[in-house]
Image 1 (tube, rainbow, N blue to C red):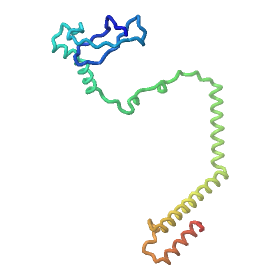
Image 2 (cartoon, rainbow, N blue to C red; image 1 turned 90 degrees about the vertical axis):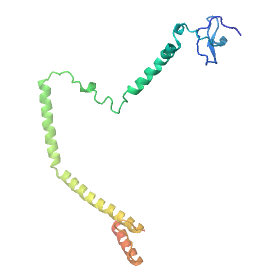
Image 3 (cartoon, rainbow, N blue to C red; image 1 turned 60 degrees about the vertical axis):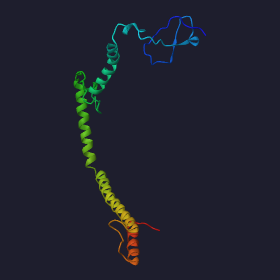
Length: 184
């Protein structure tokens, strides 16, 4: 195993006991060697002229800044960008109005209005609307009858058979089945 003559990094912390990998330009990545950190208090030239109190303050400054940012930052809420105007709110350029296109558009609008009026007054549409109304009423009644039958069989709800004699109960349920169109 080769050893490196000059480490790239040195740390002054005596608590660090793990080994670090150093790279030499002549060695490929597979031949890197691990060397323990130096435990000298003055190994980093940056902090060598500072007192221990100044070193602590200097090293804790990033932590203090991070805590200050976390405490003062406002959380983003849903709809954070909802007040922003997008590109769709920017009006487009004014296009030139051509008279012949304007006339064609007006004629088409008149044709569409006439066709809509004819369709709304047609007897076929009136007949279909009337049938639809009748079917809706009939279907609502059928659904109510089915729910009433179910409530009578289970003994719950408005159609409950609670308190009826067994003969009255059977008669009532058979009438509901006949009304709902249920066959057994």
